View 1: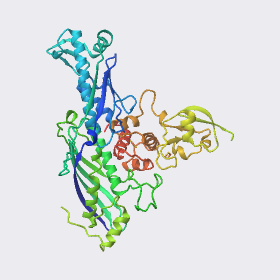
View 2: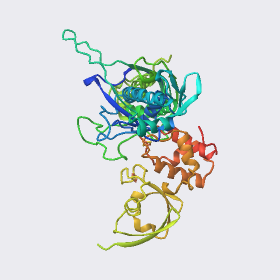
View 3: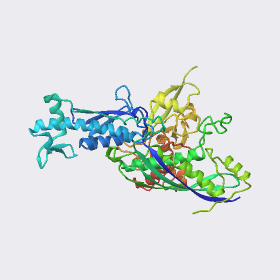
Length: 340
Length: 158
Ligand code: FES
Ligand code: FES
């Protein structure tokens, strides 16, 4: 028995969101009489952090502390329309919608503040700590809370805003079939190192190194969390998971978590990640979104690493020990490739 | 079918309920006690999100007959924080971004607590062993392992 090391690489060009129907999402922002703001969305936070990131975007745009913003998600009865949380579109599409809504709400808030301070709204600025003051004269100031109270009880104004993000529809050229399926792309490159056992066909992950270019990372810890967790899922798709192991024959399909294989905490490897920030021109504060691309490059990189280790090219996922072993046998033994 | 009277301690408090024969502890805790912290993932021992401590030992509540815990002491995630203060493990989970959707988190925290209660300074291998019966779909495990090690080291940050 010999264990062979191999290294494989993959790079990807990943579209953020999609083109279908303009891929719209809406957001509504309004202030409460307490001077706090609510963002109403029907978008869903699956744990990836959409609530946190839309909260940051809203607070930054309004010019108020992040603690003053509450994000209400996932109710299509009370929230405005959203296409959904998929296609890595949340930060970019919903973020843009929230930004537009917050901008409109900010306009009303500044008008209401101007009326209270008896100045021109254009002369006002927010301090990001819950106050609005005259530029160059910070003592002429009013809190957002007092503005909200004045708007609600005195001026009869709603401090609110509507936002939508809609991608301009890209028609398909009838001659060439050419179209522009996305407006914003993220990029990544990942190197996987594996160890392949030529007697059992088992593949063990040794380490991963990756670089992700995903626009501005609005919340770096959430980005890192997404990339770490997503790479695990990529390994899982590359080597373990399948509902139909002998597709199209339905036999031996897993029926529960015991039979549906996924790598456990003992099967993971070190993963060094570099995040490159190149702000996207049409993203909220330059953000694209790490979404699904966190898993994608792992699959081809692992397949390439297995080829590099034992010389077998497996193009059918997941790459189970059985497939590796059959392929090694078919070519008459492991044939390690050159390593660069 | 007649109900069976059952008494046990739930997070330091005595509780008395009536259960049907065959009721598992997970259902008893969630539906009869109202403690929703142990989650239902699979109901057959495959995921670990229903984990609780029985007399300090880690058990899968979905595979435990409720009748068998009479007179014993059950700890769930609901009893973990001390008053308004998060338990150091909870703090470390938050600081290390060890939860995304959070569905595995109750089970992970109970497994981690069982480990630290018997071994306050575990190695990375000990931590991996301790959570190997718990499935997480989101985090890739690394942040969870780091959080448990951080809590053990008394450093509640990454
Ligand atoms: S619900 Fe008990 S192990 Fe899955
Ligand atoms: S955080 Fe989602 S399953 Fe672990």
